[in-house]
Image (cartoon, rainbow, N blue to C red; front, side):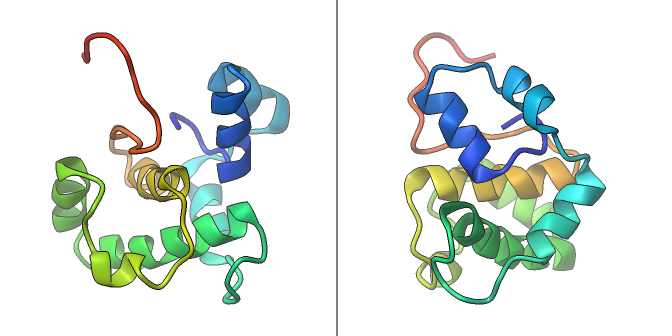
Amino acid sequence: MPDGSSAEQGLRAVLGGENIDEVNSKEGAMPPKEMRAYIMNAPDEMNVSYSDEARRFAKALLKIADADSTAFLKLSRQGHDFYPDVKGKYDLTGFMYGWAVNAVRYILSAKPVANPAIITLGEEE
């Protein structure tokens, strides 16, 4: 997601064929600082909600990125199956995984990477 949206907002946009920028403008995109707080305040319990589980995973990734952002950014560009030891502790869909990775990249002011749950047809930039 290009802006600070929740996993539920992003999923609704993708499944409903909506433009994510329009969804964000309607529901209020979070700037990176607010996105960081949103993620760091994720509940500790599993499966409270779809977005909360994605946030819990993003929180783990954000802690890793805070410790070494260069390594996180490099690994997150290489594919969707990095940090498998961390990933195994969460009940994630492919979309949630991709949302969490891109939420952390957004906080770090990095461009988003492909979400493994979304197929893009056509040429990449």
